[in-house]
Length: 170
Image: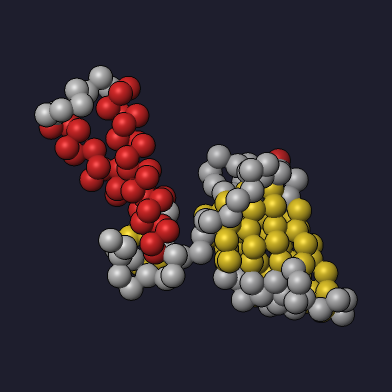
């Protein structure tokens, strides 16, 4: 049975979570040498794994989490698709995005990424004006700790402007 109040993908999410529970319980029981019948730990595993699976899937009791996460970028340490207002469509390795002024955004990356040594790349997204541009600075101080933040500046016709963009840290 799928959680109520979710999107049209709730059946798929629940099915995937159930598959993950079954697979994880099998692996955990095998790796820990827990007997297949009658072990109290085996009875607890589905609840533990279900909680993890629903959290990983971004769903808890049928309610979707914020857009942080959800990006598939296998060769990037961090990546984000950001709307002009600073909201995140999807991301990986990004813990927050803040719009600090017109056309100015702070991208906070995971603690294991040193932004001062990274070579980030940003580009405007479809829907941005053709004559707009995006700049990136990994050592700017206006966002706070430069080891955790990447600054993205955007403009149009020589003036700061809010535009949608993608940013990636390979």
